[in-house]
Length: 441
Image (cartoon, rainbow, N blue to C red; front, top):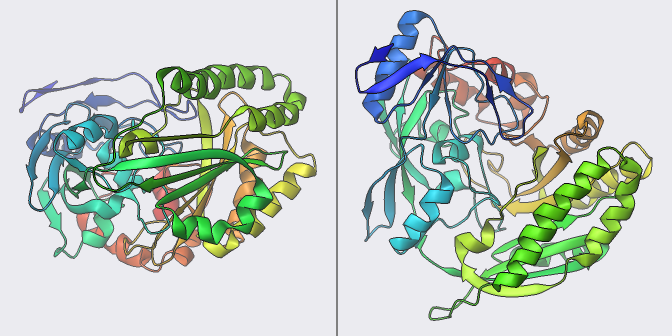
C-alpha cells in the first residue's frame, strides 16, 4: 500500500545481515525519506498491530535489527542537513553511512575524533550499538552525539539534546526507544594520522601495554591464535602542516587487498574443510605481514576494507584484566578445543557517561573473537564469553553473546534508568524483537 509522504511500503521477502548468520522475514519493508515519513510508518504499523524495526547496513551480528513486522530501511535518509563551522557541529540524517559521511566531513574541514575499523554502518546503527574504535584517551562514536531526533511509539517526533532527561539513554539506544531519524555530531578539525604497523611478539606487546595505550592516540593489536605473533598498530596525530604520505598503490594493494582479503579469504575457505592446517597458516600469516609507516587522512588510516565474511563476538573489560583474558584464551586453544584462523583483535577506549555504553564509567579494553562465516563458532564464542564475563565483560550490542537482562543489569549501573526511558518512549513495545526481549526484559 502507498502511504502519505511519497514512500512505498510493500510486501517483503527475506532479509539477511552482513555476517549471513541472521535471517528475518519482515512482513513489509519501508524506505522513508523524511522524519515525517517515519512517523507515518510508525503510526500505521501501530494501527495494524505490527512491530517496527529500523535497519541500516545490517552489520550487526546479533539479531538486534531483525523483525517479522515492518522493516524500515534508512538508506534513503542519507543527507548532510547542515553544519556550523564555528562549533564544528554537523546535522545528518540517520541513515547516512560512515563510508559516505567521512569524506563529506573532510570536504568541510572536519572529522570524527574516533572511528571503528570498518565503515559501512549507518550513523544510527553505529551509535545505537556502541561502535567504538580505539584510543586510550578517546571514547566511542556515540560520545560525539550532541542531539538526536527520535520517532517514538506514538509516532511523535522528539528532539533529545544534552538538556533532555533521555539524553543518557538515546546515544546508545539499541533501537529500543524508537527510530532515530536525525543526529547532530560534534566533530573536530580534520587531521592526519601517522600510522606505524609492525609484527611484534605477543609477550612484548603485553609487557609495554600500559605505555602503548597511554602514549599513542590510537593503539591496537591483532594476535594470531595458536602462535605468539601479533601485529601492532600505532596511529598518532601529526603537527599542522605535515604533508600526506599515503601507502603506495602497489604496497596498498599487496597488503590490504591481496593478503588481507583475497589470500586470507582463500585460506579460510580451505581451512573450513582442513582445520588442522590453521595453526601452520597462522604462523605463516603472522610472519608475512611486514612493517610499514605512512601518513594519511584520519578516516583512511583508521578504517580497513574487509571483504571476507565472518561472525564476531566482542566484550569490553577493565584494562587491567587484559593479560589474564588473553592467557585464558590461549590455554583454551592449547587444550585442543578448536582451531581459529582469524586474529583476535584488541582495542582500548576511555570511560564515558552513556548509560548503556560498554565504556560506561570505566576505561576498557575490548577483545574481539572472530570465526569464518562458514565455520562453526559455537564452542569458541561460548568459551570466550565465559572468560570475558569472569572479568566483568560487557558484550558489544551488535556482536554475538548470550547474556540476558538479569546479567546485564548487574553490569550497567544505569540499566534500570534506561528501561524507565524505554517504558516512557515505547510503552507498547512497538520497537521490540526477540533480541531486545532477551537483553532488556
